[in-house]
Length: 88
Image (cartoon, rainbow, N blue to C red; front, side, top):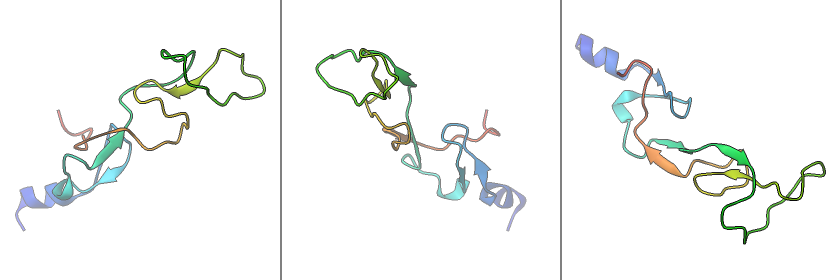
């Protein structure tokens, strides 16, 4: 194995999804993430109802601004290549 091939096969840390990955198997759908933040505010469409906690004000909605998923642990709604901290 050449020096460049060894470097390419070592696992790296993705700065987008914070997962380790092998650059040799990195594809356009390897990294799954939310491109926006998890927010707590009234949703723009105002037609959906959200589960509120006991201490939440009645207008609060908690969701990802990009896709509307209400679970902070929801899988990402967007996929792309992993991006390493080594990549510039």
